[in-house]
Length: 259
Image (tube, rainbow, N blue to C red):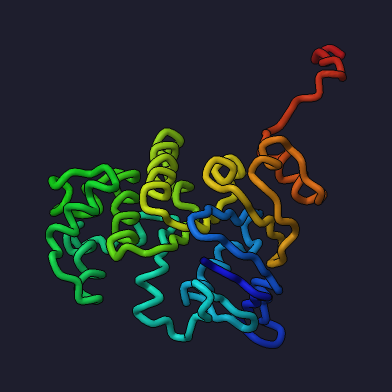
């Protein structure tokens, strides 16, 4: 479904040059969920932006269903690939109702039966028709992210790019959104690429993942290996250990203030 070949993304020139992504390659099968993990600044979100045309591709190729994407992206690309952003409040227009937000992609692509499609999209993400004419500020964080997912799905794409879709949400709401995404993938046969710094989120949703550091691919592994703590690369092992939290060394006796 998606094939990334030797992708490079460079911003700036000369002394201001930043190599954000360096020769990254991976492929994602139809219906699979693939994760990109790493520290902040590792280039994982830039990979998603390069795929959908929000960041320049300096070198390499992006192929969707075996066809290289063009610059700028055409309408056919956005019928196939859509993106859900990290902050649902920033990605929704504050002065547009949910109805207008969901009807806009339908209007751009000349789709008919807009009202029925909007109501169906709301049902698919667990929201009723009463949400149709609300504004973003009238919604909770989880509801806003559900609307962002509905907007991404309303054109019936095959691929969803998920840029940390739960990191701005409370822990309880995170689980709801992850379960929703998992259900939607299975029901609709979607292909996911999920970016996250949270290894537990990636292990829950993805079968395979790529560990990135400083714009480079460090190691490709499986979620099963992640859960069992098995990693051949030292950096991946350090990420696994960091995700398990801090442990207090109880070997040293605690000294009193009196010495």
